[in-house]
Structures are given as structure tokens and as C-alpha cells.
Length: 161
Image (cartoon, rainbow, N blue to C red; front, side, top):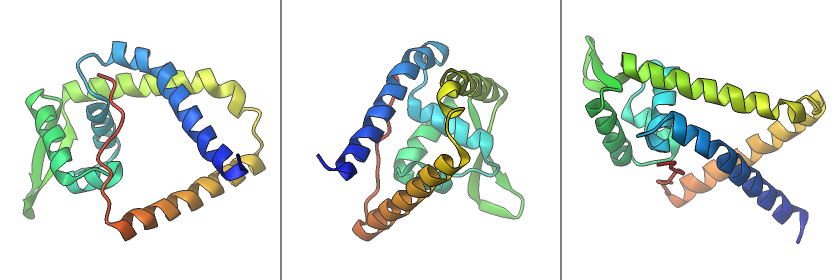
């Protein structure tokens, strides 16, 4: 196996381990919510004037798929839709009070996981971080170009139902 394959397998293995370690705590703390719903809540909580198009682009999903998720979240009372006075065509989303609580629980879990893994990241030098970030950015730009070139829409994210 060459180094390129080892890097890809390493990323996949790391991702799977993180998901596996975090899954049970996430499921327990966020009962009744799919991963895609929680990530939608997170995005809306972090980004003012979120809409279906921005969400779809962020998650590499179709607008139709995100529309279904946002409708479910509205029905559950987690998010609210609104329009701007100067643009009655576009629909935006914000977190409801209940949505804000879920957002806070999710953020606390991320901080807990970050604290768990802190020992590793404390050993990484600035130069190593810069090198890793540079590689991730280059690879991400390459994949973005491939997605665009092939006209693909990635429509699946892991769910922890």
C-alpha cells in the first residue's frame, strides 16, 4: 500500500473512531434527533440568515433534502422561518428557544470531546498544524472541483438515530 492510500485509510479510520466514540453520548443526549437535524440546528445556530440553499451547499445535499429536514424541524418547534421586509421571496431560519437548548447541548458535547482529545493536540507543533491544514485545504479544493466537474450532489451524512 502506498502512502496516498495509507493517508486516505488513516482519515477514514480516524473518522470512524471519532464517530464510534461520540455516537452513544450524542444519541443519549440528543434523543429523537437525527444527525442531519442536529447538524442543521448547529449550522443555523452559527449562521445568521440561514436558508435552504446555504444549508444544502454546506452539507453537500440537495435543496429538496434540506427542505424536508427544515420542515421537520419547524414541525418539532426547533427552528422558525422568517422573511426580511425587503425580500418577501426568500425564507430564512433561526433557532427557537427549544432549538437553542439543543444547540447548547450539542456544543457542550463537542467541547467535552475536544477536552478528551486535548492530550494529542497539545503535542502537535504549529508547523505540524500548518502542514496538516494546508493538506486538508488542498485536498478539499480538489474534491470541490471534482464534485463541480462531475455535477455531483452528495446527499448522505451519517445519522445517529
